[in-house]
Amino acid sequence: MALVNKVLVIGGGIGGMCAAIMLRRQGVEVDLLEVNPQWAPDGAGITISGPTLRALREIGVVEEVLRRGGSWSAVDICDANGQLNVTVPTAPTVGAEDLPGGAGIMRTVLAGILGNATQQAGANVRLGLNFEKIEQDESGAEVLFTDGSRGRYELVIGADGVNSAVRRLVVPDFAGSAFTGQGSWRAVVPRVRENSTIYMGKTTKAGMNPISATECYLFVLDKRDGTDFIPPEEWPSTLAGLLEEFGGAIGEFRARLLDGSVSHHRVLYRPLAGHMIEAPWHKGRIVLLGDAVHATTPHLASGAGMAVEGAIVLAQELSRRHSVEGALTAYAGRHYDRARLVVNASCRMGLLEQHGGSREEHTRVMVEAQQALRRPL
Image (cartoon, rainbow, N blue to C red; front, top):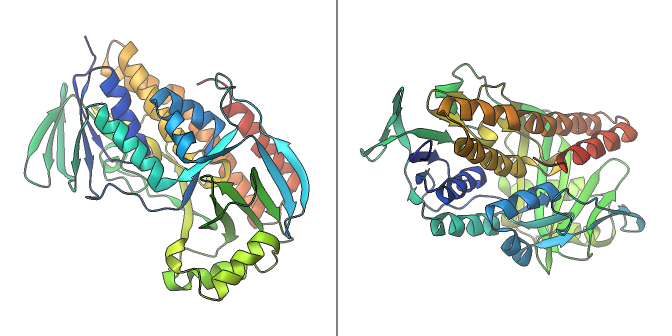
């Protein structure tokens, strides 16, 4: 008999959908609640590391992700004008040696793939809806929804992101994510190389990762004094300023930013923030997942991966333990160190980039973290 028979997942992002898929596989009845009536995320491309591809195979969607995205097994390091300096092969991931070293895909495409898988798994998806109140007792939680309906569940999973509302019920004194001092710029551009590519300028580093057979997404991180609002119509000119020292394919894209042929709808900016919440990650029958407990910057391309892995671990523990309390404790115990590694290493890499720190340390932190993440869950 299943440890829980009916679960509410609040948040229809990557982690929430993966949790719903894994729990449905165990025969658990799942309601998935998503406040956005369109169920569509913002964003340009997303990078998927080798370990995340391994996790997506566990979810059952890796073949479609690779078919509709772009992948690579090496990284080209180039100068600012696109002249190749060195090609670095990606190391294999334990248990997924047959998969590429990395992949990229449009965030909306990935969400669509997981959304279809969630519905095919039999989850009851409720869009344009939120929770009003959650009251719990020893055996479950009574949830009042914003449309006036109610439901009773043996477990509520808060997968509602970096600004989680469910988190207030579990960690009421959490002050919120901390700004890291960097902003992230992304734009979709034509694919010009087979591999993932890093372009090293004197003061700025830019990258291009394939997201399909014909497109890449360009990413740049810059140092920021704060989270001041930048009007979207200024995004193209601001990004062009950051790319001033680059030639080659990036220089060509910069010219299009300046002449107005690339609108702000093709550029995305967001200030970077992160947090790592200490365990326990649950209170009674409410448990947190993904960015709600561990939000990271994109330096290791593992934020989404940690949400997927967290969903897998949570479902596994719910299937093997004898009590809900024991399962939720074991979930945080197994997943905590990997999530903390991603948050801390990413934060350290960001600080080194902002303050002109040692490139050797930056490389060491990145390589050591990647080696650890390639080990089995």
